[in-house]
Length: 124
Image (cartoon, rainbow, N blue to C red):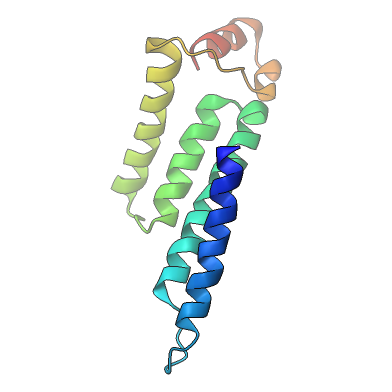
C-alpha cells in the first residue's frame, strides 16, 4: 500500500514540477524532469532484471545486468566493465554461498548435465 502512495504522490510531484518550469522563457526542459525520468528508467531496469532471473538464473543475469548498468551509467572502459562483472559475481557469491539465501535456479540450468546443474542450483 505504501508503494502505491509513493507512486501516486511521485507522479503528482512530477506533474507539478513540469508545470512549474513551463514558464521558463528559454523553453528548455527542466533538469528536475530528467532526474525523475532517470529514476523511472532504473526502476524499469530492475523490473526487467526480476523477470530475467527465473529464466536465465541468478548468476548470469546478475553479471550481465551489472555490466549493462555500468555501461548505461557511462563507465565504458574495460576496467570498469570488468569491475561491474566482478561486483555481480561477488554479490551472487555472497548471497548464495556465504549467506545461503535461497533463490530459485534458472530454467536454463535444466539443460546442464546433472552434476553441473546441481552445483549451479546450490551455489549460483
